[in-house]
Length: 594
View 1 (cartoon, one colour):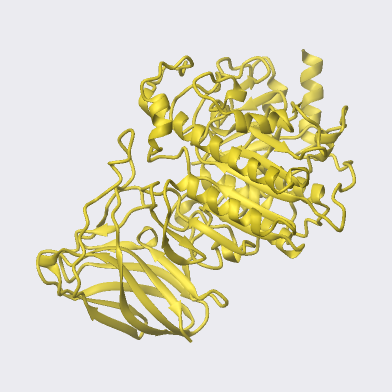
View 2 (cartoon, helix red, strand yellow):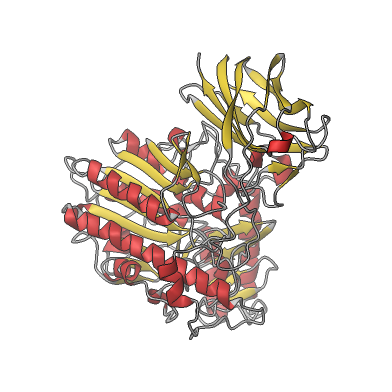
């Protein structure tokens, strides 16, 4: 045992995130590069699949990706949404990217980063993203500015309604069509058909099984009265209805994965399409997840381990299980290698090319470390051990549940991992949320539309959010002319912009005069149309939600503003209030007209 500790310590000191570079030559032929479909679930745990041994649900289509391709037994992402999405798109640690939170601008990736979509678009791929983006709303943080030619979905962290909600299509506000995961898949199917004769990259970041827990009746009816065979084994209380809803939502994802695969077969694209499947963090509640400790938000194994499957029929091995640790950082360099495209990024990639693990029967692979960080907590995973945020050491080969601290027995390993953790934090320098001083972009050249949602604004006076979680919130309780909302913005290029306000107002409150200003530019208009729908969302919820309820907002033209280049506070206020309240506010849309 002592000899093992010494050797392991040497390895961990000398191979900090080392990746073996001896991998197969690119498999793609220059005249026919393979397509890529990257499917990302939202808040699905490692245990939320039949493949993981969960008998509470059936996921034959997702499981088939593992059976017909390769599965990674020890694949890790970050504890929450935005960091994982940033890492898989860039191949770089999110702590380098400016990602500090999951809302109010902290979810944005720095603009000097290169995404997988950038690389593939440059190589001639058609690119599309349909779903939850969660890495920036305003151009140039918007997906249309990060390599995706077509985007349909929402840029926020969560959404308040999964049934025909307000969405956007390349910056334009639109209304969804039916259950959101089905709708996103419909767009994916259309994209595949339209690009069947050229290489394409389809990114499908579903928003389920993230809350609110909404799912069509056909899936809920199979689970609402089900006796769960697999239960959460820890001391925390499991909400069984929440679990049932999550499993029903995963089964809906499975159906949509089946639809994607059927489309590939019908168009004879299966052999020339790489399909990947994973989730962005651990489960969003305590439910069966093997015996892993922790859930979403935790840097323990249960918060960061995800299924990861990759299928490429007749090109990569069928049914191969890969035990070596890997992470979302590895997706970009691996795909670039497989399709024969140079990963031409502005900055060094932190991830590893996994192709040698995929193809070689006895791969030569160096020891590496994987880091998980969130909310000031950091853990480090080697092939055998995990050092948690409190510097307790666990033998993950023997103790997936992290129940026995073995730091004393493996003191050299503990010391080496503690040093590696400190070095990583010092090198990648995660930014504290309160030190993120980036303004919101407005009028970025080449992008005619900019959305400024309530989520990114700051209320003053009596105004408050509809919920403490900002992502799908709106502003309400506007009862005084001294109340206002501000956005810290930077206008990137001078120009004139037509501005629309998305609002609701009751009949008895119409007549308020609203003013929008930035610097010396001001526009004002009177609200003359009443529109006051009831709050919604609860009619579709299977369990009570934490997030804001929602309602439909309508647009009103405020006028045209001429804005100078520079930074300042965009201010929305009232000059006069009729009735008891002015209006509720959801977002502003700016459209460049000059």
